[in-house]
Image 1 (tube, rainbow, N blue to C red):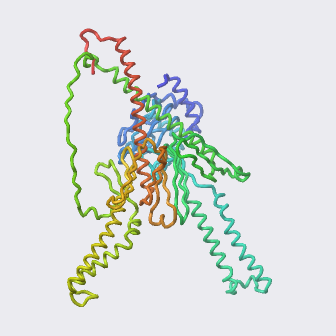
Image 2: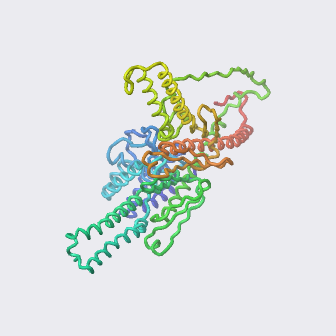
Image 3: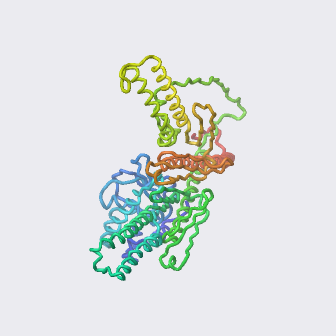
Length: 577
């Protein structure tokens, strides 16, 4: 933490108070008096400033330096509500409404805050009663922001901006409907020329029949373009940028880029209309997913600044997390009891190796085999298996299943004498029907087994694509890929019918020579993409932390050894472990 004394902290606090909209009606003397009533607190990374449910709500705070996160720990899993950086007010809701703390607030970097008590708040409200309304309004906006949800939102991210395309993008689609509307006008003019009065249109059924189709088609096209304009989303969170492109009655596609992989953000205007109405195209170049392009966004320059600001904050959080890890490791190392260490000249401990023969698992034929599950999760949630959509299975067994049912019915009818038989038939026909039923069952089972063995698997570290033939008669191709090589995960629903039955493809772009993985024709592709992205994100975080700890461990050991050389223990001293 940067060194800062009380006078310097108060000076920075006064500047923040002067710039804060809640205190804009206070004069210089009131602002200075407010700043002098605070106490300065220093919070190391990870320090809890507030605890959810705590009924000790006699203080509220203003961030002078650093950043804090508000977390709903009662939600399962814990849910991030907001990030609060320099100038943010913390804990004001509890004092205003006399309610327990609504969230746990902890420092995500070394921070400095100004703490105010209830007496200061009472004095502040007497100076400007409008401050209460401002605080209540800002608290409601925090709640609304925390509750914003989009498909695939993670519990550790908050939506910063949710944008739609500019209204000009909708107007640009109205050329076709407008041209169609011109046709009825031409028809009306022709009607006037040939003697059908414009004022008698309501009674001229022939003219109405000529005009109505154009009006209906134009209205339907306008409605289509409006809904199609409104259903696309551009979302910026504290972790990533997401673009969801939905085409009405056709399908949808989703692309996203983690903030840490963004290389540049470019904004382009095409003509004077774009400049006048502040509508631009934005191009987000990344190190992994190529370029995410979105056209006709309002205030694209503002969005660009938000993206870059959130990217910088995300990188700073990672850097401060690394600093905390080094600090913890160094603290543990310096407190280590070197007298309790095993002598380096001593004998190594004896290692006993127990050899265990691999367990032979005999597959069991159960009724569970015939249950067509499109998603299977292991009890410990370590691995998820997806199969193709049930519609694909239905297409495969569309012929063998009816044949099987018909032959089974004929077999039963031939035995007991049901229609089309008037009495039980002889054994020859029964044998023929029995063989036919077995052949039909084998045909059905062959198609079903081929669908069942063709699976996609995702664990905590890798993805697996299994392309198998029925009963492996024509072999099986198993392709595995580590999360190390994954660069992006997108999904695509190609047409309206697939959208109707929620069927699509999940494309996993990798840096390997074998190319991309594609989970084709899976059910609910957005949930599949969400699950893979969540596991990939956790894997990337763990890998980065492991690499960081391995590097830091070497540095910490050197510092620890240097400390022990320069601070040797006394002959009878035993240092705490």
